[in-house]
Image (cartoon, rainbow, N blue to C red):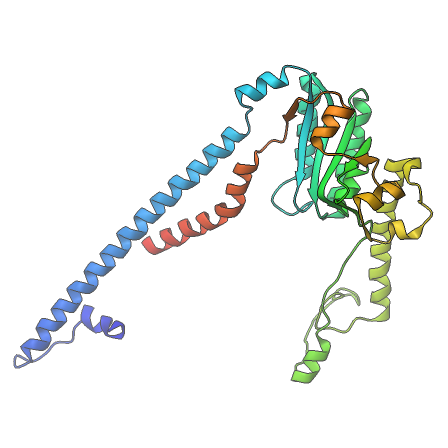
Length: 329
């Protein structure tokens, strides 16, 4: 039926002796088509309105999540242990972790009632650049406020870039089953040149500079490029090792052992033996037994519920709004 719509909207002239049944059927189908189109337009309009209202609701929830509740304000007015959550991939594109850590720590120092800061870490790592910046910023803020210790408590995982950041803390605690360490750097890709040979496909890559196309999976990698990649990774790894040694100091019991910096992961039990963590603990035991101030106040700017809504549904809702408005126009 759809391929006849043009004929329905712009019917060809017929002779006076035309078939009246055909004319009647054409008029009925044309009217049904117009009605269907009107219904679709209004349906898209209401979908767009609903989606915009939902986006407004998300914005209101996120805004309300930035302010402390009355109960939290009361707790923050007394002596307490400050809590900051560091979750997810470091530099993963959702959040600016450096700004989050800086803003949170500065809010703690401004309050004046916090006895210590606990950074609750649960991350597989991520960007070495973001990790390096966060490491240095934490150390700078610590130097400005030496009376307030900073502890990192690893939960399920504090590996790679997360451990890079954790090394800036005064002490690191973890559960015996936590996964920590992974002091290494990784970079990779695919070599599809063999597949292209089998398919009989040739790559036409135009470059200026012999190494400009290095990393292209459809172009063979030269020995020189392999050395460049290894040198790049080695330089980043050296900075990582330097930061860990600077932060952990003499607590690294086996710093001369290359296995510690090989990129391997450690359980909390193993990490304590080699000095990657100081002791076992969680946020509650550290606040209670180390800081001696069990009253925990969360200084993380955005609550987890708002963050979940924003990440899981925000992009989808925006796409639905765009689709609905496109349908309207």
